[in-house]
Image (cartoon, helix red, strand yellow):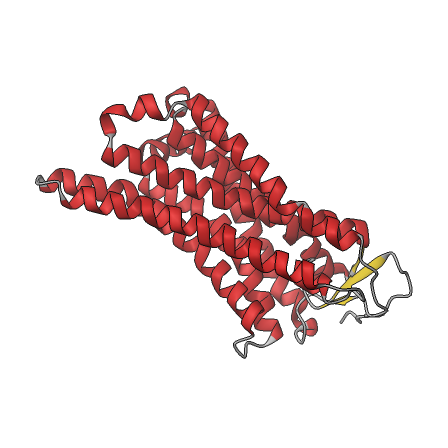
Length: 312
Protein backbone atom coordinates (compact mmCIF):
# COMPACT_ATOMS: atom_id res chain seq x y z
CA UNK A 1 0.00 0.00 0.00
CA UNK A 2 1.36 3.39 -0.94
CA UNK A 3 2.19 5.81 1.82
CA UNK A 4 0.94 9.34 1.33
CA UNK A 5 3.31 12.13 2.28
CA UNK A 6 1.17 15.25 2.41
CA UNK A 7 3.80 17.77 3.39
CA UNK A 8 5.93 19.96 1.19
CA UNK A 9 8.69 22.42 1.91
CA UNK A 10 8.94 23.56 -1.70
CA UNK A 11 7.18 26.95 -2.07
CA UNK A 12 6.70 26.34 -5.80
CA UNK A 13 4.54 23.20 -5.44
CA UNK A 14 1.13 22.13 -4.17
CA UNK A 15 0.01 18.72 -2.93
CA UNK A 16 -3.11 17.12 -4.41
CA UNK A 17 -4.61 14.67 -1.92
CA UNK A 18 -6.80 12.82 -4.41
CA UNK A 19 -9.96 11.72 -2.60
CA UNK A 20 -9.74 12.71 1.09
CA UNK A 21 -10.46 9.82 3.43
CA UNK A 22 -10.28 7.21 0.68
CA UNK A 23 -6.52 7.22 0.09
CA UNK A 24 -6.29 3.49 0.80
CA UNK A 25 -8.83 2.80 -1.95
CA UNK A 26 -7.19 4.95 -4.61
CA UNK A 27 -5.98 1.98 -6.66
CA UNK A 28 -9.45 0.40 -6.68
CA UNK A 29 -11.10 3.71 -7.57
CA UNK A 30 -8.64 4.16 -10.43
CA UNK A 31 -9.96 1.04 -12.20
CA UNK A 32 -13.44 2.38 -13.12
CA UNK A 33 -11.97 5.87 -13.56
CA UNK A 34 -9.47 4.69 -16.17
CA UNK A 35 -12.05 2.48 -17.88
CA UNK A 36 -14.54 5.35 -18.21
CA UNK A 37 -11.77 7.63 -19.44
CA UNK A 38 -10.72 5.18 -22.17
CA UNK A 39 -14.35 4.57 -23.16
CA UNK A 40 -14.97 8.32 -23.37
CA UNK A 41 -11.88 8.94 -25.49
CA UNK A 42 -12.70 6.02 -27.78
CA UNK A 43 -16.31 7.15 -28.29
CA UNK A 44 -15.49 10.80 -28.91
CA UNK A 45 -12.55 10.11 -31.22
CA UNK A 46 -14.80 7.71 -33.16
CA UNK A 47 -17.34 10.50 -33.65
CA UNK A 48 -14.61 12.91 -34.78
CA UNK A 49 -13.12 10.34 -37.17
CA UNK A 50 -16.44 9.34 -38.77
CA UNK A 51 -17.65 12.93 -39.24
CA UNK A 52 -14.30 14.02 -40.70
CA UNK A 53 -14.29 11.12 -43.19
CA UNK A 54 -17.91 11.36 -44.33
CA UNK A 55 -18.67 14.40 -46.48
CA UNK A 56 -22.41 13.78 -46.08
CA UNK A 57 -21.98 14.56 -42.37
CA UNK A 58 -20.34 17.93 -42.98
CA UNK A 59 -23.45 19.72 -41.76
CA UNK A 60 -24.02 22.23 -38.92
CA UNK A 61 -25.48 19.69 -36.51
CA UNK A 62 -22.56 17.27 -36.90
CA UNK A 63 -20.01 20.08 -36.70
CA UNK A 64 -21.56 21.01 -33.34
CA UNK A 65 -21.37 17.37 -32.25
CA UNK A 66 -17.65 17.42 -33.12
CA UNK A 67 -17.16 20.62 -31.12
CA UNK A 68 -18.86 19.00 -28.15
CA UNK A 69 -16.69 15.89 -28.53
CA UNK A 70 -13.53 18.03 -28.53
CA UNK A 71 -14.59 19.89 -25.39
CA UNK A 72 -15.44 16.59 -23.66
CA UNK A 73 -11.97 15.26 -24.52
CA UNK A 74 -10.31 18.45 -23.26
CA UNK A 75 -12.28 18.51 -20.00
CA UNK A 76 -11.55 14.95 -18.93
CA UNK A 77 -7.95 15.05 -20.19
CA UNK A 78 -7.33 18.16 -18.07
CA UNK A 79 -8.15 16.15 -14.94
CA UNK A 80 -8.04 12.37 -15.31
CA UNK A 81 -4.35 11.75 -16.24
CA UNK A 82 -3.14 13.67 -13.17
CA UNK A 83 -5.72 11.90 -10.99
CA UNK A 84 -4.45 8.52 -12.23
CA UNK A 85 -0.87 9.57 -11.47
CA UNK A 86 -1.99 10.30 -7.90
CA UNK A 87 -3.86 7.01 -7.57
CA UNK A 88 -1.24 4.76 -9.21
CA UNK A 89 2.13 6.36 -8.48
CA UNK A 90 1.44 8.69 -5.54
CA UNK A 91 2.63 11.64 -7.65
CA UNK A 92 0.72 14.14 -5.56
CA UNK A 93 2.88 17.21 -6.14
CA UNK A 94 2.11 19.79 -8.82
CA UNK A 95 3.90 23.05 -9.47
CA UNK A 96 2.08 26.33 -8.95
CA UNK A 97 2.43 27.06 -12.68
CA UNK A 98 1.15 23.60 -13.58
CA UNK A 99 -1.78 24.02 -11.20
CA UNK A 100 -2.81 27.38 -12.67
CA UNK A 101 -2.37 26.05 -16.22
CA UNK A 102 -4.58 23.06 -15.45
CA UNK A 103 -7.17 25.41 -13.96
CA UNK A 104 -7.19 27.59 -17.07
CA UNK A 105 -7.60 24.75 -19.57
CA UNK A 106 -10.23 23.04 -17.41
CA UNK A 107 -12.44 26.09 -16.94
CA UNK A 108 -11.97 27.27 -20.53
CA UNK A 109 -13.08 23.84 -21.77
CA UNK A 110 -16.08 23.86 -19.44
CA UNK A 111 -17.14 27.33 -20.63
CA UNK A 112 -16.71 26.23 -24.26
CA UNK A 113 -18.76 23.09 -23.56
CA UNK A 114 -21.60 25.23 -22.24
CA UNK A 115 -21.40 27.57 -25.25
CA UNK A 116 -21.66 24.62 -27.64
CA UNK A 117 -24.78 23.37 -25.84
CA UNK A 118 -26.36 26.82 -26.23
CA UNK A 119 -25.54 26.80 -29.95
CA UNK A 120 -26.99 23.29 -30.29
CA UNK A 121 -30.22 24.46 -28.65
CA UNK A 122 -30.39 27.33 -31.15
CA UNK A 123 -29.73 24.85 -33.97
CA UNK A 124 -32.69 22.73 -32.86
CA UNK A 125 -34.86 25.84 -32.51
CA UNK A 126 -34.21 26.84 -36.12
CA UNK A 127 -34.64 23.23 -37.34
CA UNK A 128 -38.09 22.93 -35.72
CA UNK A 129 -39.46 26.48 -35.81
CA UNK A 130 -38.06 27.73 -39.11
CA UNK A 131 -37.06 24.61 -41.11
CA UNK A 132 -37.41 26.23 -44.54
CA UNK A 133 -34.69 28.76 -43.71
CA UNK A 134 -32.46 26.35 -41.77
CA UNK A 135 -29.81 26.02 -44.49
CA UNK A 136 -29.76 29.80 -44.92
CA UNK A 137 -29.53 30.72 -41.23
CA UNK A 138 -27.15 27.96 -40.11
CA UNK A 139 -24.38 27.44 -42.61
CA UNK A 140 -21.10 25.68 -41.85
CA UNK A 141 -19.31 29.04 -41.99
CA UNK A 142 -21.71 30.55 -39.46
CA UNK A 143 -21.30 27.58 -37.13
CA UNK A 144 -17.51 28.05 -37.35
CA UNK A 145 -17.91 31.73 -36.44
CA UNK A 146 -20.17 30.86 -33.50
CA UNK A 147 -17.57 28.32 -32.38
CA UNK A 148 -14.86 30.99 -32.54
CA UNK A 149 -17.00 33.39 -30.50
CA UNK A 150 -17.58 30.64 -27.94
CA UNK A 151 -13.83 29.96 -27.76
CA UNK A 152 -13.00 33.65 -27.24
CA UNK A 153 -15.67 33.86 -24.53
CA UNK A 154 -14.27 30.74 -22.85
CA UNK A 155 -10.73 32.16 -22.78
CA UNK A 156 -11.94 35.50 -21.40
CA UNK A 157 -13.94 33.70 -18.71
CA UNK A 158 -11.18 31.29 -17.66
CA UNK A 159 -8.11 33.54 -17.83
CA UNK A 160 -8.76 35.94 -14.89
CA UNK A 161 -8.95 33.13 -12.27
CA UNK A 162 -5.32 31.91 -12.63
CA UNK A 163 -4.10 35.48 -13.21
CA UNK A 164 -5.68 36.64 -9.95
CA UNK A 165 -4.22 33.67 -8.07
CA UNK A 166 -0.74 34.19 -9.55
CA UNK A 167 -0.57 37.54 -7.72
CA UNK A 168 -1.55 36.04 -4.35
CA UNK A 169 0.88 34.89 -1.62
CA UNK A 170 0.31 31.28 -0.53
CA UNK A 171 0.41 30.04 3.06
CA UNK A 172 2.49 27.17 4.41
CA UNK A 173 -0.39 24.71 4.08
CA UNK A 174 -0.33 23.87 0.38
CA UNK A 175 -2.52 20.77 0.47
CA UNK A 176 -5.46 20.67 -1.96
CA UNK A 177 -8.10 18.11 -0.88
CA UNK A 178 -8.97 17.24 -4.46
CA UNK A 179 -7.79 15.39 -7.57
CA UNK A 180 -7.29 18.60 -9.52
CA UNK A 181 -6.68 22.32 -8.96
CA UNK A 182 -10.15 23.60 -8.23
CA UNK A 183 -10.29 27.39 -8.10
CA UNK A 184 -11.85 27.80 -4.65
CA UNK A 185 -9.65 25.05 -3.17
CA UNK A 186 -6.57 26.99 -4.31
CA UNK A 187 -8.06 30.29 -3.13
CA UNK A 188 -8.39 28.84 0.39
CA UNK A 189 -4.60 28.38 0.53
CA UNK A 190 -3.80 32.04 -0.09
CA UNK A 191 -2.83 34.38 2.74
CA UNK A 192 -3.95 37.60 1.06
CA UNK A 193 -7.38 39.14 0.56
CA UNK A 194 -9.46 36.66 -1.44
CA UNK A 195 -12.75 38.52 -1.69
CA UNK A 196 -12.15 39.35 -5.37
CA UNK A 197 -11.27 35.73 -6.18
CA UNK A 198 -14.34 34.37 -4.38
CA UNK A 199 -16.71 36.90 -5.91
CA UNK A 200 -15.27 36.26 -9.35
CA UNK A 201 -15.80 32.51 -9.00
CA UNK A 202 -19.38 32.94 -7.80
CA UNK A 203 -20.35 35.59 -10.36
CA UNK A 204 -18.77 33.84 -13.34
CA UNK A 205 -20.26 30.47 -12.42
CA UNK A 206 -23.67 32.05 -11.89
CA UNK A 207 -23.52 34.07 -15.11
CA UNK A 208 -22.20 31.23 -17.28
CA UNK A 209 -24.44 28.50 -15.88
CA UNK A 210 -27.43 30.78 -15.29
CA UNK A 211 -27.30 32.67 -18.60
CA UNK A 212 -26.56 29.60 -20.72
CA UNK A 213 -29.28 27.55 -19.04
CA UNK A 214 -31.72 30.43 -19.50
CA UNK A 215 -30.93 30.61 -23.24
CA UNK A 216 -31.25 26.83 -23.57
CA UNK A 217 -34.57 26.87 -21.67
CA UNK A 218 -35.83 29.71 -23.88
CA UNK A 219 -34.94 27.80 -27.06
CA UNK A 220 -36.66 24.62 -25.93
CA UNK A 221 -39.63 26.56 -24.58
CA UNK A 222 -40.16 28.02 -28.05
CA UNK A 223 -39.63 24.59 -29.58
CA UNK A 224 -42.24 23.00 -27.32
CA UNK A 225 -44.72 25.79 -28.13
CA UNK A 226 -44.14 25.28 -31.85
CA UNK A 227 -44.42 21.49 -31.54
CA UNK A 228 -47.81 21.66 -29.83
CA UNK A 229 -49.09 23.86 -32.62
CA UNK A 230 -48.39 21.10 -35.14
CA UNK A 231 -51.63 19.29 -35.94
CA UNK A 232 -50.05 16.30 -37.68
CA UNK A 233 -49.13 13.66 -35.09
CA UNK A 234 -46.35 12.24 -37.24
CA UNK A 235 -44.71 15.64 -37.64
CA UNK A 236 -45.31 16.27 -33.94
CA UNK A 237 -43.42 13.09 -33.02
CA UNK A 238 -40.60 13.79 -35.50
CA UNK A 239 -40.06 17.27 -34.08
CA UNK A 240 -39.87 15.93 -30.54
CA UNK A 241 -37.44 13.18 -31.56
CA UNK A 242 -35.04 15.73 -33.05
CA UNK A 243 -34.72 17.40 -29.65
CA UNK A 244 -34.76 14.40 -27.32
CA UNK A 245 -31.09 13.52 -27.52
CA UNK A 246 -30.04 17.17 -27.12
CA UNK A 247 -32.07 17.37 -23.92
CA UNK A 248 -30.39 14.16 -22.68
CA UNK A 249 -26.96 15.70 -23.35
CA UNK A 250 -27.93 18.88 -21.51
CA UNK A 251 -29.15 16.89 -18.50
CA UNK A 252 -25.97 14.78 -18.35
CA UNK A 253 -23.84 17.92 -18.65
CA UNK A 254 -25.50 20.36 -16.27
CA UNK A 255 -26.99 18.13 -13.55
CA UNK A 256 -23.66 16.91 -12.06
CA UNK A 257 -22.18 20.42 -12.51
CA UNK A 258 -25.04 22.13 -10.67
CA UNK A 259 -25.00 19.57 -7.86
CA UNK A 260 -21.22 19.84 -7.49
CA UNK A 261 -21.33 23.66 -7.38
CA UNK A 262 -24.21 23.72 -4.90
CA UNK A 263 -22.40 21.37 -2.53
CA UNK A 264 -19.24 23.46 -2.86
CA UNK A 265 -20.87 26.85 -2.30
CA UNK A 266 -23.40 25.91 0.36
CA UNK A 267 -21.95 22.75 1.93
CA UNK A 268 -25.24 20.86 2.24
CA UNK A 269 -23.57 18.48 4.71
CA UNK A 270 -21.85 16.53 1.95
CA UNK A 271 -18.66 14.69 3.00
CA UNK A 272 -15.47 15.91 1.24
CA UNK A 273 -14.85 12.55 -0.47
CA UNK A 274 -18.41 12.53 -1.85
CA UNK A 275 -17.94 16.04 -3.23
CA UNK A 276 -14.66 15.06 -4.94
CA UNK A 277 -16.20 11.92 -6.45
CA UNK A 278 -19.19 13.90 -7.75
CA UNK A 279 -16.87 16.53 -9.24
CA UNK A 280 -14.94 13.83 -11.09
CA UNK A 281 -18.17 12.23 -12.31
CA UNK A 282 -19.04 15.56 -13.92
CA UNK A 283 -15.98 15.20 -16.16
CA UNK A 284 -16.61 11.55 -17.00
CA UNK A 285 -20.39 11.18 -17.38
CA UNK A 286 -20.85 13.52 -20.37
CA UNK A 287 -17.63 12.26 -21.99
CA UNK A 288 -18.85 8.66 -21.89
CA UNK A 289 -22.57 9.19 -22.53
CA UNK A 290 -22.58 11.88 -25.23
CA UNK A 291 -21.17 9.65 -28.04
CA UNK A 292 -23.59 6.89 -27.02
CA UNK A 293 -26.56 9.27 -27.06
CA UNK A 294 -25.63 10.59 -30.50
CA UNK A 295 -24.92 7.10 -31.81
CA UNK A 296 -28.32 5.81 -30.69
CA UNK A 297 -30.45 8.83 -31.57
CA UNK A 298 -28.82 10.01 -34.80
CA UNK A 299 -29.47 7.41 -37.51
CA UNK A 300 -27.17 9.00 -40.08
CA UNK A 301 -24.22 9.00 -37.68
CA UNK A 302 -25.07 5.54 -36.34
CA UNK A 303 -25.10 4.04 -39.84
CA UNK A 304 -21.71 5.55 -40.67
CA UNK A 305 -20.18 4.27 -37.42
CA UNK A 306 -21.45 0.74 -38.11
CA UNK A 307 -20.04 0.96 -41.63
CA UNK A 308 -16.55 1.65 -40.31
CA UNK A 309 -16.85 -0.95 -37.55
CA UNK A 310 -17.82 -3.61 -40.12
CA UNK A 311 -14.70 -2.77 -42.14
CA UNK A 312 -12.41 -3.53 -39.20
